[in-house]
Amino acid sequence: MSSMQSDHLALGAESAASPGARLRRAREARGESVHEAAFAIKLSPRQIEALENDDFAALPGMAFVRGFARNYARYLGLDATPLLDGIEHLAGAGQPDLSPIRNADGDLPAGGGGRRGSFPAGVVVALLLVLLGVGWYFDWFRTEPLPGLELQTEPAPAFMPAPTEGGGAAPATSEPVATPAPLEASAPAAP
Image (tube, rainbow, N blue to C red; front, side, top):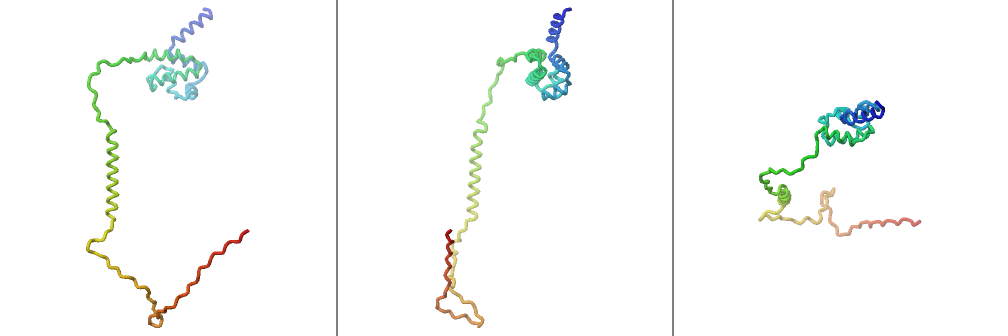
């Protein structure tokens, strides 16, 4: 066989190989372990092994499978488009059927508005409770004299002299008592 024919056969075999096998061959050609590749693209080794074994059920979902495969292919220097096409073919995921369901019979449940009507009612009830509490508080501590009971107040004596040592009360004098005048504060000296 000529070298051109062997290159063509290798290219045909690579396109016929599964996407996981292509990823594994590219990783091994770089001389990297599963752990090194996983660390480089921030995936777990279990996820790398699932991609290389075409075990897409072990991964979270097809959107993640496509993203993981795209990043892994970019890291290994492979074209991601044929890999993603191979993954779609293996997973059996064609275009999703978006036609409307024709046999959907039945009535839609009539809603009473949901929470929209209950929220303002709850606020109104809470405000009324607060107002009642405030009214009760002020009514409870209100002090009013009882009817028919009047307070008798006597005027306080103007001056009661203190007892003196002589035993008697000191005579009241009508002389004015001198009180010292307050001192005025001196002004600070001007600089």
